[in-house]
Length: 320
Ligand code: CP
Ligand code: NVA
Image 1 (spheres, rainbow, N blue to C red):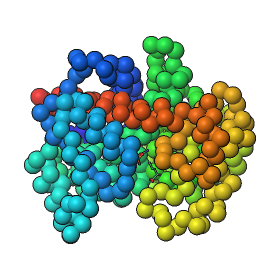
Image 2 (image 1 turned 30 degrees about the vertical axis):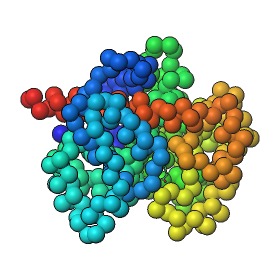
Image 3 (image 1 turned 180 degrees about the vertical axis):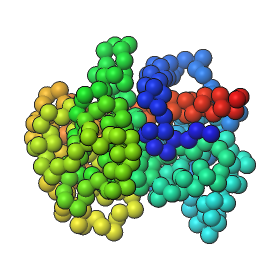
Image 4 (image 1 turned 120 degrees about the vertical axis):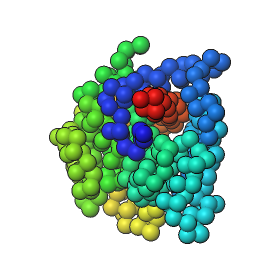
C-alpha cells in the first residue's frame, strides 16, 4: 500500500505527473465530467493541530473527487482520554478508506501506517509538510513553464531561498522537495536553528545534500534567488519558545529591500498564516511579486492530484 508521508514517497516521474494532473484539475474544476476516484469512499481528516487551508482544501477536495470527508479533531476522539494511536489506527481502518493526518510528532503518521490498513497522507507534522511543498513547487512551475510545457522541468536549476526558522517543517519540506525536483535551496536563519541531523540524514539518503546550503547572511541568500520564502517563526507546538525565537529571527524578516536584492522577477511565497511585521512585512505581502494566494488556492488542486495518484497506485497494487 502506498502512503504520502514525505516528498520522496512519489518517484520523480510521479511527482511530474501530479503537477500535470493538478493543472488539469484546476482547469477542469467547473466541468461536470471530472474523474471521481474516491467515489463510494469515506476519508478521515484527523487534526491534532489548528488548520484553515489544509482542513478546508482537503474537505472540499475529497468531496470533489467523489468521496465523503469526515473532519475529526483529535480532541473530540478517545485519543485525548488515553486510547492509543495504534488502536485508533486499527479501528478507523475498519471504517475508512484513507486518512489525512495533521500531527505533532512525525511518529504518529508512522504509527498509522504500521498499525492501520488504509493509505495515510501527511497534512503536516513537526518534521514535514509535503502537501504544501508539492503545492508550492506546482505554483512556481505555473509561473515558469511555457504554456502547456513541462511543469517539473521548469524548476530545474532554479534557486529557492528560505528565511527564518530553518529547522522547521516547511524549511525541511521545501529543501527536500526542491532538491528532489532539481532546484538549489538556500536555508537562511540564525545560528541555533540550523537544519537538524535527522533532516540532513534524510537529504543524504537521497544524495540531495549538495543542493542545499545553510547561511546566516540574508543578503547572501537573496542574491540570485528566484523565490524568497518564509514561514512563521513560532510553529504550532513551539509557543513556549516564542520570545527567544522572535528575538533571534528579527534580522530575517523578508523586507522589500531583501526582495529587491533578488530582483524584479523574483517571487515571494509564504505557506500562510502570515504574521505581518514579524517574518514578512505587509509591503512584501502586497507586492506584485507575492503569490501567496495562488499558493493557498493551489492546495486544493495539488492535493486532489495527490489523492488521485495514491488511489491509482493502490488500485493497481490491489489488482496484482
Ligand atoms: N499552510 C497551511 O497548512 O495552512 P493551515 O495551517 O491553515 O492549514
Ligand atoms: N511551520 C508552521 C507551518 C504552518 C502551515 C507550523 O508548523 O505551524
